[in-house]
Image 1 (cartoon, rainbow, N blue to C red):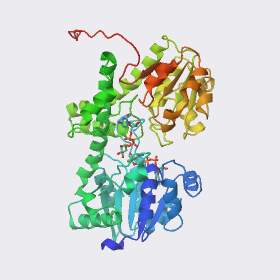
Image 2 (tube, helix red, strand yellow):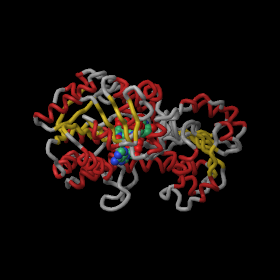
Image 3 (cartoon, helix red, strand yellow):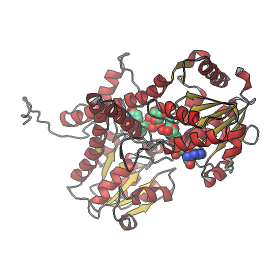
Image 4 (cartoon, rainbow, N blue to C red):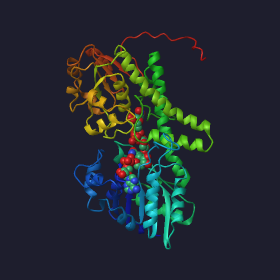
Length: 482
Ligand code: NAD
Ligand code: UDX
């Protein structure tokens, strides 16, 4: 097949990745017709409306430019699959919640359903691209489904093309990626398919940034990239605990080590813990894979990145309770930020959810403010059975507020859980005057001016730094381990 023969692209899955990625493909490749499909009719209706189902800076403009020109959102999955020369599979691959590998292995049922649907409908030659994050050798399972359902004159070539976008900066990441990774089989048809997918990206990505590898390297690189990124956060978070115990300042330590060009300064932001739909899921995926490959030491190594993250979330919640005189029962606490990071409305695995759970377990009254997360999403997350066995406690303990000043009125404390820029410029003098005294400020993202808050009168606690006077007694010999 000639590189230029890809005319129609279909994307299965109109979620964060499928819709963002393929909207950019349509925006940049006017010679292609791109149809994004989903099982969820409400989501597709939203993509066809002015009120898009996800918030991502810059996405609205890109969708509005391309939609109706060469970008279409549809529920007619079969028609889009039949017509397409190239199909991206961008469906969800969540961690399994039941059965074998529960809580660790990725649930590949949506990938398998997509592969079976393509196999039953396909005519002629098509390129099928794994865009979802999958375990290593998932492409082999897809190929086996294709092979077992093979029809005459149908040729399906499977490629791996993992996505590296980060939410909140997805448009920047897609328009100017560090690299595009394409894995394929080391055969003439595999190589031709890789060239065709490269051709699409070459509309806006320099060729030097397009990396071609074998399929398994591509699949493993995605899991490895997320594991390395999350590992850096867990590493600096581990050091933040040492800082709090010694009087060192984690921001200064991060800056000092980040100037070493071998270490680099990115992803060294200590926090109350990482969240998001990818890091934990993908590391669990890697851990499960290592266990299946009988590599228990490797599995344990990566598992520790998650264990440390859980520790960090717990540690911060405990510090809040300790500082508030060891009881938060019936105390009003404002939560600033519910999304897992700034500039997104996504709350999946948000550390805020776990912090709220700890505080609700202790009977605290929470007033939650987030500039983008929908009210219904906050309630749904907090009523999830993993968070609240008795969902009625959320009705009793949680209020959602749309104004940060109102949210802090008569509270004993506020807690910054998400690093939204607006939190840096609030009038904290005004906030202080409307709070109960002593007023506590907990900064889980190290974004506020702690000295200023301290001067206003707040008791300030943050990650990896002690604000205000405190005595440190550092033992000269470590305590015995057993
Ligand atoms: P998502 O849940 O936002 O979207 C997935 C969509 O797929 C859903 O709308 C779902 O209805 C749809 N779907 C499921 N089965 C389908 C089918 N058979 N046909 C059509 N549609 C179907 O998920 P997401 O965040 O976009 O993630 C998708 C994949 O990309 C995952 O594997 C994820 O790990 C990976 N990824 C995500 C990110 C991110 O930042 N969210 C970044 C890189 C990679
Ligand atoms: C991540 C990867 O960055 C991206 O390449 C991949 O495609 C999907 O997973 P995402 O989860 O969207 O992207 O956001 P990211 O910026 O990586 O942040 C993840 C979490 O780590 C957030 O909760 C964020 O607040 C936290 N974080 C990030 C820190 O705590 N400290 C940091 O220095 C950076």
